[in-house]
Image 1: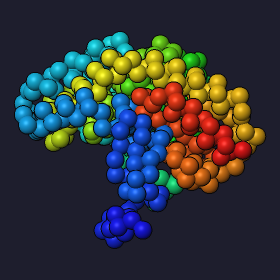
Image 2: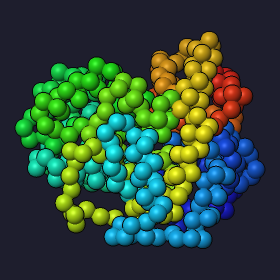
Image 3: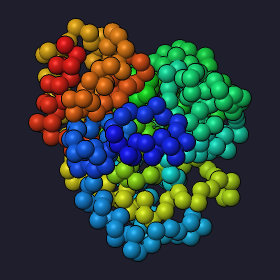
Length: 384
Ligand SMILES: *Cc1c(COP(=O)(O)O)cnc(C)c1O
């Protein structure tokens, strides 16, 4: 049917199991396929398009910067990068005043692992079961899922896993050789599972006692997704390093590690050619300004509550649990979710799996009330 599908199949070195939709255009919370069909996009580039597809403010910033300066390596200072670093420090949780810029989530995690080892002179990295931190070798070593890891062994030494939301087991696992504890405040890929306040506070305490660095991976939860600028603000627990990417630059590739003064790096020990380029920085400045002007954190909280209230009123019997925090939503079924994700797409709603039984929704935060209501209606209908 689609010539683009055939072309990608022929020339792409494919790593993803593909869905049979060719997306060619987006605006706000909607995308269109090559046959002109419209979808409400609760995938949003996997939690990337929070300020909406084809956001005019981001588009203007990109066009202007593309005509001014696209590339400027980290060996020079740059006006746009300086402004973005100051902006990140202004919106960051208290104390996280300095940032390192890279190009993706996995790169931010890689950097955090190296920075923690450099700072502490230790090697151990403790992360959580069901956690996801990316697919490069270091990030993969902190990622729990066996299917992602097994074929690539040996991975990086020094990594271990503890049960999520279990302070006692975390305490046992962290010792004199632990460089960092790495946690998602809400596990995304792992099925939309929020960390308890108790767990995050215990993690902070354990790191303070042992000298380990506390790293929060907010690559998926950051930038208003959960109803706060960063999910850790729900519980007032601040890490020593915060990993960011996904929604940071309105869809343009950019990652960041924000760090507190304890993180000290000797020059010349890490680097990236594209990281912090003016084009991505201009997009991020526009996207973050848009989040603030449009109060997207508040919006995520309100619309997430609206989703919950309406969905709970007609909760289908095959739903085991609804987990919702802002516009980060997981609908856990008592059976496999794949057929329902396909049925939803056929009815014009794009969603994601998180594991085998959870339907994950990460809509653009600019989604309208009417669109949220449409998502609830179709979801309830398909699941009934
Ligand atoms: C997506 C994601 C990553 C990896 O980001 P990439 O840009 O795909 O490398 C890491 N951690 C979390 C929590 C994520 O959601």
